[in-house]
Image 1 (cartoon, rainbow, N blue to C red):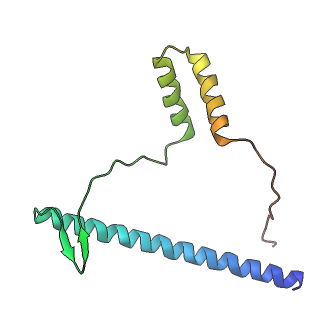
Image 2: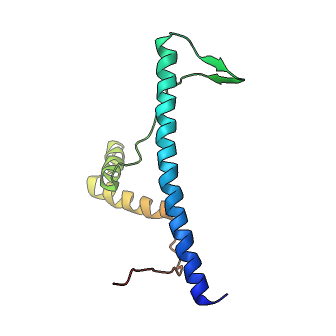
Image 3: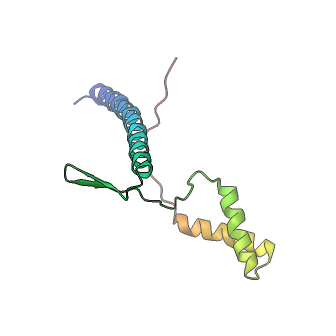
Length: 119
């Protein structure tokens, strides 16, 4: 296959991935709305759950971690915990930065293709 064929296929795949991502986002939102509606119905009926076509639907409360918290807030919270256990403020900030780097792991070099639109 020629390079132009590869480039055209790459563009096609990129568009398809974007289309599917948008479609999945819409489907996830619809699923969440339906789950909320069913849970609300079950709670309004004051029932522990319902059964329908071999499936059981039971609302349950879960604890959820907010993944959208900024890194600065996370580091600040971690620093406060270390200070609580007697580590000074300066040492706790240094320790938090080292721990974050350690959790990320070693950096590896990888070659990727940068694609820009040309005017």
